[in-house]
Length: 136
Image (cartoon, rainbow, N blue to C red; front, side, top):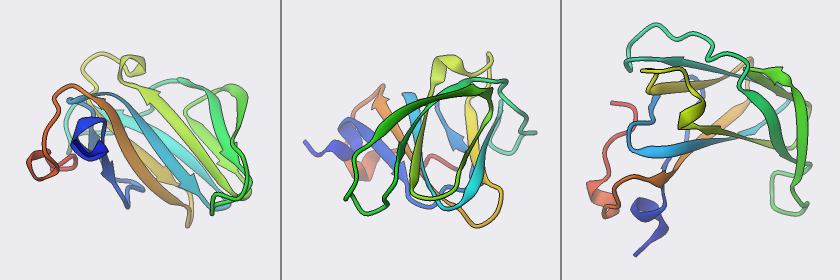
C-alpha cells in the first residue's frame, strides 16, 4: 500500500488554510522562504482561529530547499511561531498539544513564505481516492 492513505495525507499549498486533525495523531508543516510562520487553531473549520498557546519549542531546519543539505534539530523559545531567513523549516504539531476541542489548525505565512501540510499517523488507513478532504 502506498504511503499516501496509509501513513499520511497532504495539503500541498497550505499557507493560511484550516486543516482538520480529526483523523491523525499529528501534522507537520514544511515551510520555505524568508518569513515567520504562525500557528492558530479553532474548534470548527470556519471558526475563529486563535493561538494554541506557546506549543512550539522545537523545530527542524535545513539550509537548502532541494535536498542537498542535512536536517538539523533546534530548540527555540516557547511560542506559536517560527521565523526563518532562508531554507526550510519543519514544524511538527502533535494533536495532543492542541487545546481541548480544537481540531482545526492553520499555519500562516507572514509574507510570501510557502507552506505544505502533511498529516501523519492516520487513525484509519484508506486508499488515496477514499481519503477525506482535509479542508472541507
